[in-house]
Length: 258
Image (cartoon, rainbow, N blue to C red; front, side, top):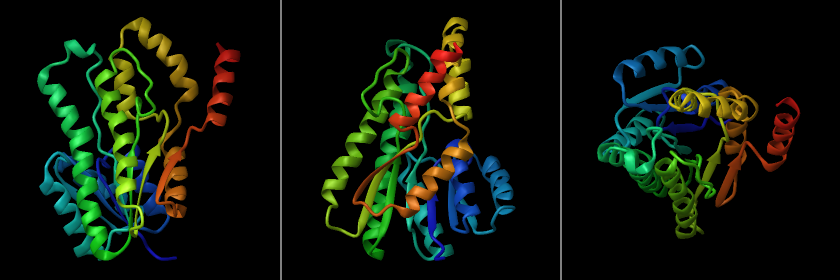
């Protein structure tokens, strides 16, 4: 098996961490990223118990320098980048859009959209030089146009991910680079748990019913996404864990159990 080199932004926790674990379990090489130096050190120790072929870059994805450092670290350590995953993202405060602080609006847009754009641009430039590579952008609630009160800003950023990725796939069509979307569905991570805790008692009670049935453990989702990414050969690919078939089965469970 040829070892692949994978760069994953926002990978010191949640689904990003789960993806790093699965790639390492499969014998590949991984470059992780996170904003906290202390958390990075802790996570690297944990991941190296799985596979020593892992390094990290501390930095915020809304800074171009972070992405350049990710490229430099991957190339100097492993000599190539096969897959780049723009996973980093932050949730919005559980409030109506008009009640969100201006600074929060700026931060969410900078991380969820600007950071992803920077990652795609930086990865594309490197992959053009080496002659191959795959880029995957992480979907979230709102990517398909669905709307929910108190998720307006987050959903807007994820809707942008969908449009942007498809548009870039048209621009690079015919090149040696592939681009696609990862659609993990609801994953039991701190990201989702914190969203639950921020709701009112009644909202949380209603959400928990859906969460208990629809949400999946990160290791299960990560294994599916990793296996499928490694096999993907399409110019544009959308890798979806929670397919319509799986969703229907889970919704039937909601009807019968509640």
